[in-house]
Length: 336
Ligand SMILES: Cc1cc2nc3c(=O)[nH]c(=O)nc-3n(C[C@H](O)[C@H](O)[C@H](O)COP(=O)(O)O)c2cc1C
Image (cartoon, rainbow, N blue to C red; front, side, top):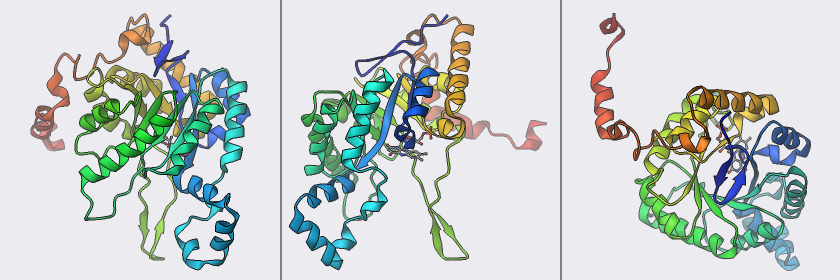
């Protein structure tokens, strides 16, 4: 039977399947079932930079009352009701999950600007976070700010978080960097232990009838996986970072693909929100079946064999393959 024990950023996990940051972290009974079904670790939903800043300001009573009376202040500070979990309840839930689940629990911070809010990382560590996942979900709207400036800004934020804790820090990235490998290497040099690839951008659609935006969240499908596979394959063995895949993992075969491309762990949100612990059991069984059936004694043995570094044909991951794909396309008529 294939050994699924996995080391991720120095954490020992009994399986590479991780519950991704999402509302499941509010539901201890469901998490207990997910752990019983084989989850190796849990990432809590995020605390947001904006939320932490509001709560930090609110401890100064005079600022709070000023905010209450000043329309302009209200317009730039987000409404507290936007955030389902406050900072104190979050810390309490982290302690509860850590003491009850028996697997590593990671806390998640979501923000991009250096500032006092990053102090919270130390509190998360004290409350028992096995690691901190920092989500750099950035939306760049300023045409005067270059990509290099945005990246410098993000690295400063990362350095603040890394400097406040002794537990590992992983950074959840968007796919939209000019060079994901170069940015990942910068993160490694800044003391980051891992990256999580990739954020999903919840792109709003335009509602033509109401001239409004449709901001409903749609869960992922396996169709989102290939962009993650590509990035994993480029990074595996080439940057000193643990690699987590997130986005589009719905089956054991999806998980196997991510591991073959270099993922240390795969994170699951949509599949578990839809299918609960039964989905996790079936993903684990299919992954195990595939690894066993193909003769792997351990998940470590399979990891990265399809990466750029190890692939039998590395050009699969490079520009040459893009050209091959374009040239190789045949219309349906041509295929007959
Ligand atoms: C309802 C919902 C809430 C989420 N909340 C967070 C969050 O608080 N922080 C975060 O980093 N990612 C969050 N995510 C993103 C997931 O962690 C995950 O990266 C993404 O959904 C892609 O994985 P999937 O294809 O398995 O869903 C959320 C996703 C969903 C569906």
